[in-house]
Every structure is written in C-alpha cells, then in structure tokens.
Image (cartoon, rainbow, N blue to C red):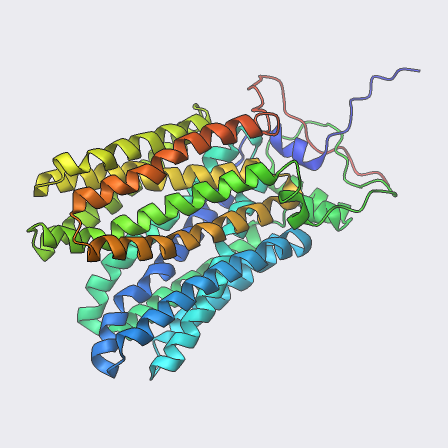
Length: 461
C-alpha cells in the first residue's frame, strides 16, 4: 500500500537542503577567529627566538632543535586529534586545544630559561596541531553542501590573517613592552573565544547521531538551521546497525587511499612552497642587492597578496569547480615561479613576483582544506583533514632542507623559485586526478528553490 508520507531525511541531508542561517554564519565567523588565533600563535615565537638568544645566551642549535620538535609536535597533535574527534567529538577537542595552546603561549612569557620556554612551546604546538582540523571539520559539518567549500576556505583564510597580525603585533609590542608581553597577549586573547564556542557551536551531527542522543540532535538542528517547515528527520538510528569502521581505516581503504595520497601530496608541496618563499626571500633578496627593509617589504607584500587571494577564492568557490580552481592556482603559481628568473632581478620585479605568489599559493592551501572537507564521509572527516594537514606541516621541513642546500650552492632568487615551479606544477596534475577520483563522492550542490525548506518533524511522545 502506498503512502503520501515524505521520506525521512538524515540529519546531514537536512542541513544540506537548508539555506545558510545566521547561526551558521556565526559558526563560520567563530571558525575564522579561531584560525586567526591559530595563525597568530603559530608564528609569534619566531619573533621571540632572536631576543632570547641575545638575552639568555641561548645557542642557535638549541633554538633549531626547539623549532624542529615544535613542528613535529604540531604533526603529532593533528595525527592524534583526528581519530579522537571523529570518535568522541570535535567540539571538546577544539575547546581543550584552544585552552592548552593559549595558556601555554601565555606561560612562555613568564619563562625564565630556555628549557621552560621550549617545553611550553612544544605543548602549545601539540594543541595547535589539534585545533585547526577539528575547527575546519566543525565548520564543514554545520554548513550546507552548496556552501561547504566556500565556508571552509573562508574560515581557513584566518590563518593568514593571524600570521600577518603576528608580525604587526611583534613590531609594536616588543620594542615598547618586551617579548613577554607579546606572548601574554597572544596567549590570552584566544581564551576569549572559548565561551562563544561553547555556547554557539553544537557538536557535529555525525557525532551526536553515533552517540544515539536524539534529543540533543534535535536541539542542535533546531538551534542552527533556519526556516523550519515540517519535514521528517530521522533522529534515531536503527536498533541494529553495522559497527562503523575506524576513521583511519576509512581514509586508507581501497576506495579512499588514492584520494588520500593525492591530498597528502598537494598539502605537502603547497605548504612547503609557502614556507620556502617566506623563509628564503629575505636572504636571497639581500644577496641580489636589496636592503633589509626592501626584503621585509617583499615578505609583507606576499602576506597581503595571500589575504586578498584567500578571501577572493573563498567567495569564488561558490561558483567555480573546486578542483579546477586548485589546478588553475597551481598552474599560475608554477608559471610565476618559472618566470621569476627573468623578471625577479630588480626590486619592482621581486614585489610583483611576491604579490602574484601570495595571491595563488595561500589560496591553493585554502582549496586543499576545502577538498579535505568534502571528499571524506562525515564520520571520518576530522581524521582525513587532520592527517592531510599534518602531512602538510612536514612540507616546511623538506623545504627548509632543500632550500638550504640551494642557498649554500649560491643559487640566485630566480633560480631557486624556478626550481620550486616543478613540484608546484605537478600539483595541477594532482588536482585533476583528485577531481577524477572524487567526482562520484562529492556531495551535489542542491539547487536553490523557492519552496520552503525541510525542518524537524514534531517529536513523538
């Protein structure tokens, strides 16, 4: 016998078919601010190391070891946080991570020796590695499929805002008040986000559904999604369900392993390329005759280009194919890098190169984050994003090594950048391969309709 009752929607389908609400915009905004804090605390210690070398007499080898172990701590934090977030909840790990890296960074301002400073820095980096992917997963979980790519890219742009702000704050606070005040400010400011996150960002729907808490799931959906109009949402799972596979096994399974490998490659090369440009542009610029001030301006121009590029791409992704956008950004970056040997010979050429690379490379990193948010199922999303991010953080390690070898060999700025164009150019091919692999897995963008959107059915009693 047939019935006119509409089919039940899963909680994720309910979110995907609804327009963006004010609460969802608030979640994205809090994600953006959290990424600003992430970028700020990630970079701020680099402005302090020269000071403690001078004030404490710390040798450069100890600083190098501290920096290296801190990077590895970020990697470890991301690797551990993903599976924990998918199993036990993303919101709790996000809040705990912000509290740890904020307090540890603030505590570094009170450190009296390099051992205490290094220990707190490693603890802060462990938490920093955990926060970025869990926040990106929360943003992805609570935004509709048609806006998911755009919102993840927009929130991730906060990292560049944070790193740029770190440079500004260090130039103002260190000369006026000393580096301990800088660390205290950068550590305590993120703690102000915790009450807002606790109040306004619910736990992910996939986690609430797995916990079999229909009342909490109903409350979260009703609080976040706008324009209710009476459809039936399946809030309870069947009594007998297959035990879900661990998230790590999902992303490394036969179905997802090629996608995972391509995503890791993209993240590794893109993050490494940004690090190499930022690290060696001042040194190689001065070698070609630029002053320290001019080299600093070139780095700043790269940063401002990154801000423009990331925000522009985050809005463009609403209309353009994500994978083609990534391929285009990588191809354009490779062309600029390859041509650097010809036009990056004078200050104006260096500035043009830095701005063009700033427009493309950080935007490519935003696109990679957005890809991680849509190629994996919600139950494994945090693991997939966190592991890709962690592999990306190893890119600067390799870039620092090979960049150092090229600098020691006496290569010019143009030659170094032209060499980097080869792996960056390969990313365009990787983006095309990702599109081919993921075409059948990407959530379809729902078409905008004039009829009312579905909402929760009345609770049965």
